[in-house]
Image (tube, rainbow, N blue to C red):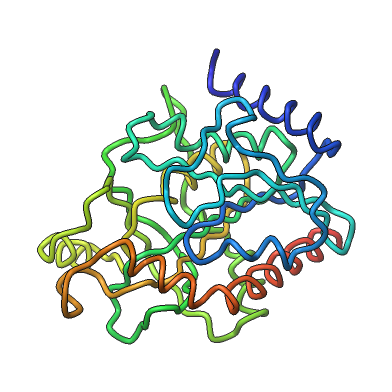
Length: 270
């Protein structure tokens, strides 16, 4: 079975389980963002991810491990993906981007990707949301197979970032850099990322964004800065720090993301 066939099977299973045959927007919720689904609208259905073809239960603390169909106030439906597969889990690139491809097969026109990440700008503080303006993919791989030359010039769609800034004019933005993980970056690697133009470091999102653009989706990316990157803060890095920063920011980030998604839906209907 090809990745496209598996995504179609997953979308069909979602339609059967939720009773919703088209989701206009999909959002993958990273650390710190999971309460957004509660603010978007009415939950129609919530399904353990491992009950849908191609998905597995989330093994990462801070992720819900479910797929949720939410009806927004304008009647459109949003697919909330709380079961992200990371590249470092060793399940292959196709598994990493399966959620994105399923979203496209389910009819989505927009993919919203969120994450918790390290910041390289000293003016950023833990708990601060940042728009992703572009990315650097340092995983050494791609979700695209064969001579399929996808243009990534406007990968993180300008019009979506403009909508986000209408909602929150103080949102800063930066270039996200995905490394393979699961270890955190060394101070030397952080200096390298800064030298090549990166502002944010993390272990997700870039591969998903590439697959989303291949599928024809508009992409919006948002990072929660959970800590300053290695060598830029005192002390060691640890995942508990990421979870604590995410938890502390949830009350603010959930409504913010929900308002941005509502703005996107309203713009599409206009």
